[in-house]
Image (tube, rainbow, N blue to C red):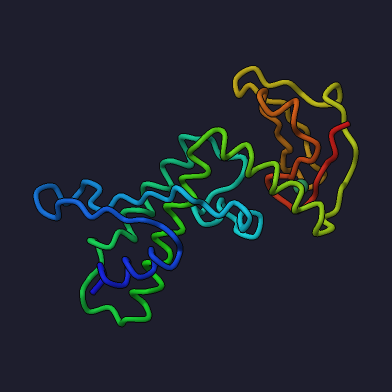
Length: 182
Ligand SMILES: [Zn+2]
């Protein structure tokens, strides 16, 4: 039944699913999801970071660790068979979202694009821009290869080296404030 619900949801979300061998090594990925036609237009409305229980300041390693933990937890083959149908469906939906979140955040290009869209979206939502900052006001961190600036909440604004050219708004890793890079 899990497989059926999964396939149904996958069809609805425009995701094609390849079902592989289901015996042998239970730890291996059984289902491969190929979401070629990803709906980029709905991206700003989804917080892919929070779907992974992560934040924009998490490193790729950290994101991957969180993704791997969740994808195993919600994997269709890991579910007990006596879960009510509604709960099973919710878990499948979660599994698909986790997979999509990683397809975006685990890919450098897509993550960059998403981060930019996210910042623009936050600005449109009227999230408060706290102050304008230039890179000269920020601290260069050799170890992380990023610029940082301390928010008045005590949190940090971070801009990695390869974001420098594109970034205009940066959100605090702790509160909802933004700074504008000038
Ligand atoms: Zn803050």
